[in-house]
Length: 305
Image: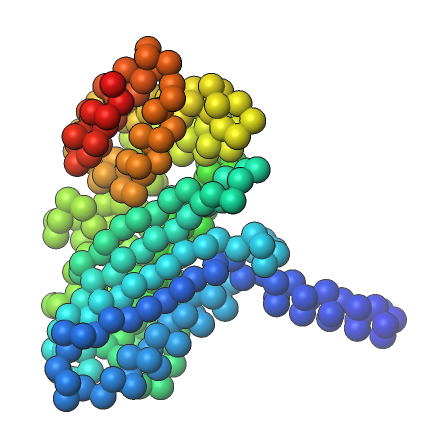
């Protein structure tokens, strides 16, 4: 091949690599509860390392322009220093999805994971290998396994909201992380028997044929609902009501599932606004479904009179 062609391909590859990262993540650490004897600088170093891990790693094979990156945030609250560079805390994960023809971002993930335990020595490499999730030290590998898991969940949900079943490959990656997750006496969140609402069950629900309609619901909510709301409110509401009907079927067949709670977290205010100007008939149907599906916000939905 002619040398100038090699140079041209090199610059294309460099451009794709530079533009290709999918996440625009903000990662923050709060360690106010940790003993003052702990060197606080270690948390700043960790925060920088995990921010770079999320933003600089390629999570897909697609090319994202800067304005297309998925906006998300991670807040790690460290509650205990267990000694030997091992920390325990909780992680708040949030992500939003832009709505067509608006400046509004709709919440697509708003979840608190309170089972975070990991080991970190300042300046140790931040690494993750999909083929060897446990690494040499499971306790040290757990934090990157957790973040890689949620990164794939976020990407999968985002893709699913733009095309039918578009996120399946990333939900499968999250499931693979669950099946190969780090194991240690103090590590939790990856096993089915530990809780009814943890990383295991979220990935299981997103990959199970029992919950196939969840994917139709996600697509209907965003592409047939929120994305057309600006141009045609009635059509947008109809798309979102269709989503609620899908969810109702899922809930009837799989009561008290994790995915139902996960879907509605952070959406109650948005849904109330969507249906507040609907016809009396549609408003009533939406209220009946929402009070049944999102029990946590039953009182809020009673506004839809």
